[in-house]
Image (cartoon, rainbow, N blue to C red; front, top):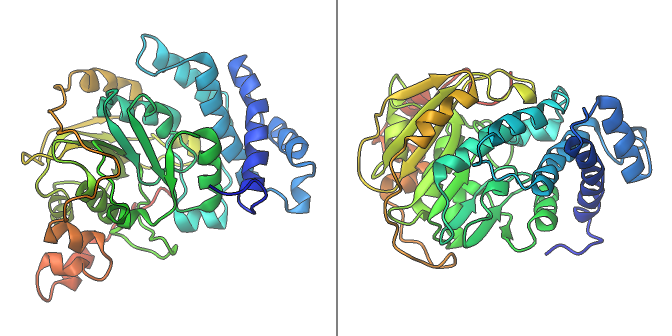
Length: 362
């Protein structure tokens, strides 16, 4: 755990302090304006943004944390009748995130919107005996819905966000490795929730296969019979010229649900379409009917109609995972990727991977 005086923990403490104040407004159903955000940040950090102690992007992080705190105070589980309408109303109280930092764009730190995170967790069907992993946990929006499991492991490469997670989720196990190599942790979760970087690697370099690498790495760690729910780029599909990447990344699994959503990230300043997939680690069909909707609430009947999860053999969150299959290893490891497509196939793989909407950046 980071000491309280560490460089990463100091900003985290200020952000959480600001979030507690903002949560008061959310709980009272009062709008959080940009002016209120700035005043709250100035009070929490003891100085204005002009000093460089915080930037506008930090205020949006504080507002995301405030949503988590408000959910806890209100006791919302996301599964109750009328909860989704309350979540929509809460999210609408916050300003649109129109400012992006260079660091956010470079590492694709785009948090999962509130309602989307709730629906993703709903698809995961987390039970009290589940060991849950989030490989790229950000500030905890997805993790907020996963605490009912037996154990929670959060991985976040960014030290400041990891410091936030340590304060928000004190009983969770938290690590800070590249999620594209999540198998190196030696954990064996029964459920994985993830919203990976879409087209950037851990160094911030462009990588159109980043999301595929992350999901392949996560599946290699998932216990047989376990479930993975992922928010993925629109290019991650079983049909079209990029289908080979989809099928190789999910080899040995079955797609339980596949949904394409327009405008899910509008609150984050972009209308890009994304895909929400529920994947079980059992051999089966990958090409399932794709449900397409623009309103997230319209997905609820389809999610609630999903069949029960399959039995997942019990295991320890700290148990050593079984070796990845060669195809998963190839996709999840940078240089070995193209070997998954056969000898002399780099050009073909790149062509398959190219996409105009690979990242959640308009």
